Amino acid sequence: MPIITADNLVKEFRLPKRYGGPLGGLRTLFTPAYTVKRAVDGVSFTVDEGELVGYLGPNGAGKSTTIKMLTGILVPTSGMLEVAGLVPWERREENALRIGVVFGQRSQLWWDLPLIDSLRLVGKLYRVPAERYRRNLDRFTELLGLGAFLQTPVRQLSLGQRMRGDLAAAMLYEPPLLYLDEPTVGLDVLAKERMRSFIAEVNREHGTTIILTTHDLADVEKLCRRIIFIDQGKVLYDGPVQRLKEQFAPWRELVVQLVPDGGELPPDELFDLPGVEVARREGAKVWLRFDPKLIPAPRLIAQVTARCPVSDLAIVEPELAGVVRGIYAEREAALTP
Amino acid sequence: MATAGICWDLAKAALRAQMEYRANFLVGILAGVVWQVTGFFTIWVILSRFHSIGGWTLGEIAFLYGLRLTAHGLWVVPFARLIDMDYMVREGEFDRFLIRPLNPMLQIITSRLRIAALGDLVGGVVLLSAASAKAGVDWSPVALVYLILVLIGGALAEAALQIGCAALSFRFLDTGGLRFLIDDAFNKFGGYPLKIFSGGMQFFLTWIVPMAFVAYLPAAVLLGRTGELRVSPVVAYLAPLVGLIWFVAAWRIWSWQSRNYQSSGH
Ligand SMILES: Nc1ncnc2c1ncn2[C@@H]1O[C@H](COP(=O)(O)OP(=O)(O)OP(=O)(O)O)[C@@H](O)[C@H]1O
Ligand SMILES: [Mg+2]
Image 1 (cartoon, chains in turn orange, green):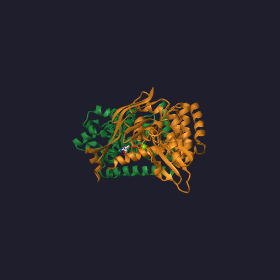
Image 2 (cartoon, rainbow over the protein chains, first blue to last red):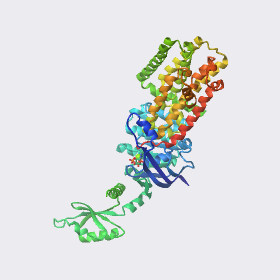
Image 3 (spheres, rainbow over the protein chains, first blue to last red):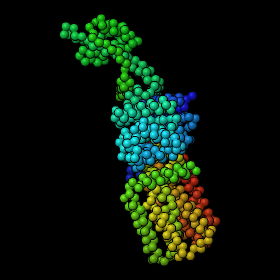
Image 4 (tube, protein in one colour):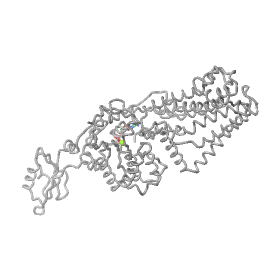
């Protein structure tokens, strides 16, 4: 049973043409001139209970806009959306009780109050019984290491501390759904690691359904089984991480450590085989990119070792980051005439 | 009633947050008092010249002014945050009100209290009691109840206009100028017996903009001056209800317009 069903979601932003001058505001009021920006353009997907989905795409792809529709902040221009049986923007308060939201770019906490006050208010707002509140507070304080700054006003927290506070606030009432829009942006390596293990634990222990946007593909590789990749408001790919690689980067790389034969290194031309190209070369080390459908790995290895002496061999899969970089580059090329 | 408890907690938190800036807090209250004293002083100067305006004596005018001021304070103290509507909508700060399980208007009300406007309230109440003695208001229990209802109704009427106007923010982003205009109009005209204006103007300030229901009509009732009104006394008696109707309508419009909220790009 899907917990989220999005069907042909479209969101257009209307940008009023603005007028300057003392009465500019009034003129804007009465002159209906708009430019329209289609940020989300027919997005459909379903998410099952307990899934942890990475929602990816380049800057301006429409990720945050989708999240805002899921949370009920934005009303779509057209299309249908159902979250746990509710249309978010029509039953906003009910929907709010069931979701946790973290925007990496903007804190939802009370800026001028100590973190603990924010958490207490969240407990009240979401009607968390006192006993459960205590238990969750203790648990998240420990898991996220909040103890040292619970009494510090939020505006004085560092980015990473604030983000942990935001995450605790979003999980305090144990919502079945969690939307995380760039929860690791600007965090150092350790903080990211801690954030990731927290997200993974919440997903595993509570069965929380999570949708995560991020530009750090290590987040995705560590956390998500499934990704939805969007670009210019359209879904480009929806499926397991592994299949994205197969679809957009069907190649493998054979890393070959050559042995100089009488002081001479063999030239690149030596590897001129069908379905093979030299992707990179660093002296005696060569990265051969090959298509396993055209030339299976054992055959390639046999051919290479027959042509020159080799001291080491390794087959590597493309990294997600590399794949995504490739997709972005392709798109750039398509966009520039 | 759980909602009332939550609102109470949020309001307390807002006060605590404001206390973080203690100096600002005190200066705010002081500025509020100074502002109201000068406001009333202006009217005082005019009054001491003419001794009466539109047949209303000094005491009666002071009573009318006190009514308006108290009602004004009653709406401004809780709705201070409305002033930031343009900013909240433009910068996407409004997001947070939409992802919490409480009516967004209740969150706005409880997210800041304008303590400086307590000056309006105190000034208004003091003026009201002093002036009612001078103007010889007959305080029967019914009149007292009517006074309380009318103050609330007046606050609701003024709040309604501001909320209706703030609703435009969702679509047009800047409405601060318009709201300032309304506030200014209430300040300028609200403290006078409206009969000194032309018939068209009176009609406008009664039926298009409910300013007459804030102070003029109720004051006429309490001072026994309903005979001079251009509307039936029944309308004047129902002033609190008119405020309530305006308020409910404005809140509805505001909620409905919030569907046009576009958030911000980041
Ligand atoms: N409130 C808004 N008003 C006008 N345009 C907007 C608004 N929000 C987003 N947009 C536009 O819609 C498009 C999608 O924006 P969105 O924020 O969804 O992108 P994103 O995928 O989250 O990007 P990023 O990775 O940079 O966060 C962008 O072109 C953006 O300029
Ligand atoms: Mg974004």
